[in-house]
Image 1 (cartoon, rainbow, N blue to C red):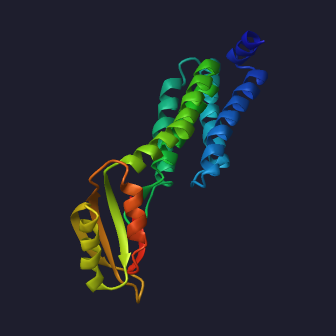
Image 2 (image 1 turned 120 degrees about the vertical axis):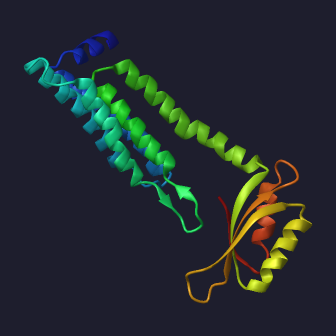
Image 3 (image 1 turned 90 degrees about the vertical axis):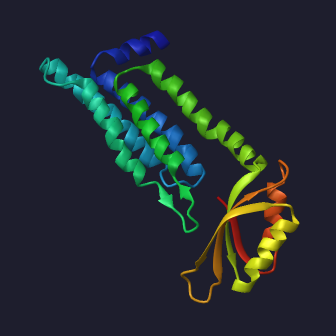
Length: 230
């Protein structure tokens, strides 16, 4: 069954095109489903469109090469997709108000999705399945490992909104009391009228695993309006 399916995808027939684009749709759906479930910028439709579009590009290149030998460089068409999808990926990357960069994983996922689409368009079933496994493994399993490592780290950066200027020194004193070293302290003023100062700094706990307890204690300070690590 599998061998016949692979064989059917090799020739540039209507059946092969349906199978290739169907495979690209499935791959884009699975990757996009993970992103949409996590409420990211690019979801199912975006990933499916990127994957199917990439697959169709390779199919068109193969078609032109069959019709007019030497008229199309299929590898060049594929490389154009890989570089061109970067502009779409940039649209998913944003810098938040606390200078945190978000969307890098989604942008990288779109790029990987385009590459999988090229493999699907070329009829390379094994490449699609294996690459799809590793992409989903990265997005689902390694995400949990990444979150665990972030919780266990001793070094992190803080974005803090404080109600009044004079409470900044109290906040820094509280960090010292908890044996948290800090450096690179930057002060700025909130753009919203009536809001207090914003403090950006780098922090380091004394022991591994103290980060979450430190963040919780700092968030509970009465003069801290908002606090986030980034």
